[in-house]
Image (cartoon, rainbow, N blue to C red; front, side, top):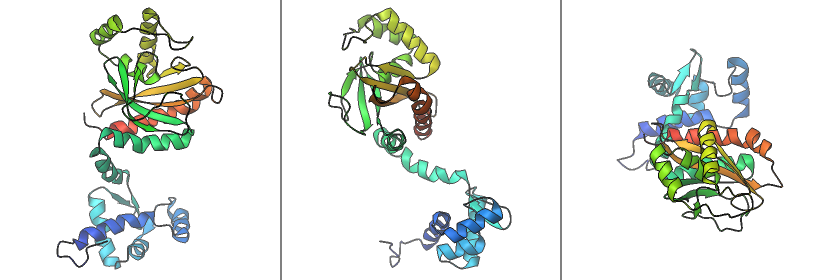
Length: 269
């Protein structure tokens, strides 16, 4: 509950937040009027902002002009609208969260758009370790949860992470890893795996088809920090009988890339 009766309650800050929230109010008549007059569904007049925030016009005007000075609001002289800089406020919250929590926030959107399971992992020795997962349904006989480990060489996320390794580290991995055949489709030839990883590095995604488990398809992309380092990978997994490879490339890959980019913007360098 608001601490309006507490001496440490900052009323001006509360009003400023209400001014910003006014642009998300669900008032169809105001929105349609603004759309017709200003060409934008989020454009509001001073009077509309004041009414929605429950403050006087003069108060709303001061806050709006302050927000405009800070770059959070733009105006054509009559209508006001939020700018993309408001997203910084949300990203400040996300960037303070552990990576697994940040990833989950975006993986939930991926799962909703694809209606498939999606995960995030990091490389740990020869394995990938799951750090976030949103399961649409159970498609693996393997039990996957946070902390689960799978071999990197036959998984889409593993290949994305291996492809990002510096040359000496990748060669060290290839010289020591045992490529065990998990299905008839599993790549067990190290030269072939090296070629595949080169292709992954060039294409910036990996797609595996039945190599970890028969009937399982998976596509993954790297997650890069704001400084460009590959820090993790995210993927979408599906049953081969439900989604073909062409559909994964056309529909799932753009969704994954967008999510990876958004995750990366809130990560430290």
